[in-house]
Image (cartoon, rainbow, N blue to C red; front, side, top):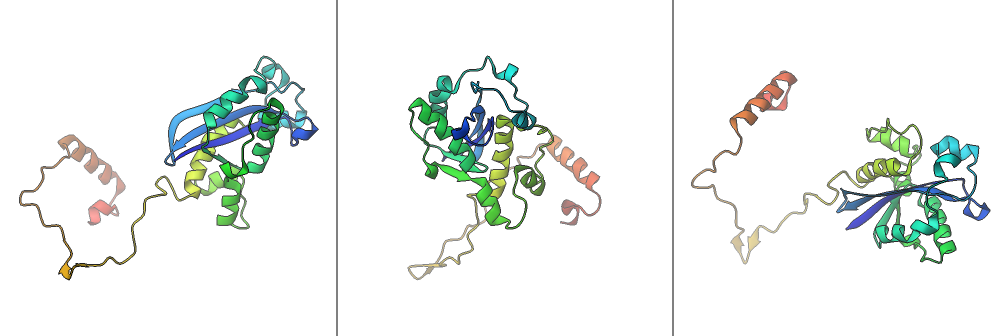
Length: 228
């Protein structure tokens, strides 16, 4: 399953009042794991940057002046996301802006059903607790020390880690069945594995064994390997 973790930066809160997107960042996931493929684009908003927005993301008029307009990159953005599920923190905000920009270009809108809102997931999992991206990083011990300002690509990368934790860690689809299995088949005992007549040779090298022993020694007497 392909998913795209997405974030935008804007000039304000309302595209209908003239606010525009100034940055898009996206990270591709395949089977809930990052593939290393990303999309990142700064965008000229064709208007001045309010001071309040500049204080959030640090993207000013001089920096954005020579960047492409959304009309020049909108189709490439749609090509990148395709029909993948879009993982977004506070999806209503980003979808609202993206659809406004796409509408002005005459391009297809992003259906709400395509979005997965991590803010909504976090509020359901931890009712009454802070659910900002920074708060979730603290909860899951995710390093966000480089997030001094909001940045779409960096926030997408951090959100990808948060999302994987919200849905159960890096292997969300792996589970051990707790359902009792039928131990008979046509009245006979079910098959059970038999010991190998000849044990398999060890795959651990002497160097790996020595490195492991050195690591365990540093853990002290309470290490699991010492007690076993």
